[in-house]
Structure formats: C-alpha cells, structure tokens
Length: 148
Image (cartoon, rainbow, N blue to C red; front, top):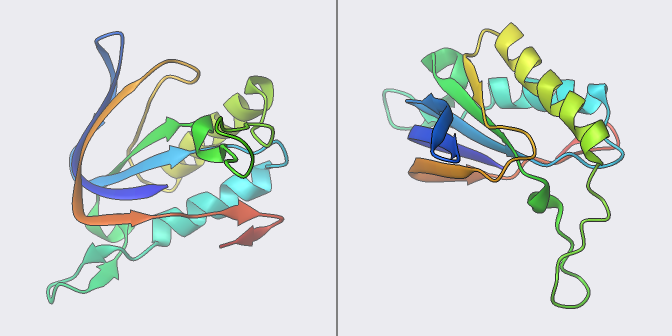
C-alpha cells in the first residue's frame, strides 16, 4: 500500500526507527511466492509512480522528481484473507525467514535508486503516525512477474 504523505514516522516501544517529511509511506506485505525480481519490479514502479502534483495540480511527478523520501514498513497483515470465517488467514504470507531478506532488499534497492529510505523494525509491534496528503492511497500488487 502506497500513501502520499507530508510527514510520517514509526516507533517501536517509544523509540523512533524512522521518520520522513514529504514522500511516501510504503506498507509492504511479502507473499510466500515473492522473489527478488518481484521486489525489483515493485521498487521500479514506486520510484517512478507519478502521484505528486505538478505546477497545475495534476499528478505528474514521481518521488524521484520531488526529491521526497520513503518510509518502508513491513506489514504481513496486508495479506490477510477474509474469504472464510471471521478471523483473517495469513497462509499466503511469507515466513519471517523469507520475508526479512526481501524487505531488506526493498530498502536497499530503493536507496540505490537515490531515494532516501527509512524503515520500521521487521517483526516488531510498530506505531505508524502519518499525514496522508490528498488523500492519496494506492494499492500495488506484484504477482507472477506482473505489476497490477
């Protein structure tokens, strides 16, 4: 999930692990079938996604164009399947051993793209504070090599 923000921060047990001003908050869920290639495609899409306003107020600018930052937060609950019963199933979520390296790769590739990137703390109970501008919230899905 991608949210355009004017500010955002994440804390764990009262300690800040990351904060940004103008930019994007990325809440990222890793599926059991996700690969390095999926992460690279997602980073490319996010880095070049035109959801920031230009001089006429149209969404024509990317995070690269604006010089903004990213706050990346791992969130396996995005993969909750609500199709049966009243409690979400997380059967499609990657194990921590699979997800952690892919989340780390996401941050590394984002930084290599020239985008300042802060993160939450993988596996921790985090408090995310943000001001969603617009509001603009986009859901990006990468599956089987496709970006949807």
